[in-house]
Length: 188
Image (cartoon, rainbow, N blue to C red; front, side, top):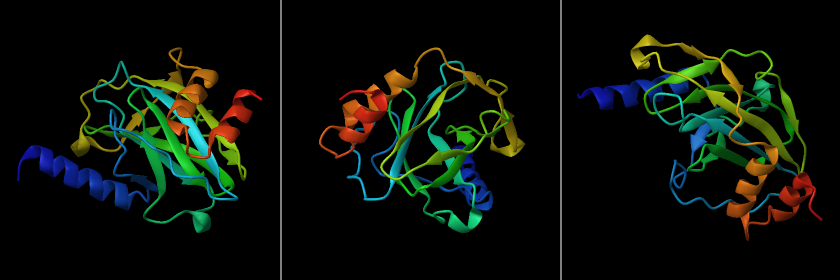
């Protein structure tokens, strides 16, 4: 078994063992075409941005957990869509309290250590919830055999809330999410 296959197998195993609630949808992935699912009545959306220009490997996974384990979406998790620039979208999120504890590339998985970034946020029905724009600098050569890795993120200056929402709006055309995104942007 070659090293990349072993690494992928270990990543999958660790994701399952850690109880992550993430599912990368078939059209997800950096640079892949993205189309959003139509909104389901009573659900919301989470959007955010990860600046990984100073890290080893591009971020390909963002883990979003519900703060109430009994209410977690199970092994399938939330559908996370990664846009080519580091913007991520989770649509049709059931109302509740959520937080983002982990980030991953194809080379590493790291737990976020900042308490302020780990603070739960609320998603309401029909709402687009902006998580934030953060930069991650992960260059210590960590790999799956040296888990668990930890990472501290800082506020990104590459994108702000308005830019992230506009980016998501550009891929949301015709999906039914436009009204909620425009409301969050303050557009009429």
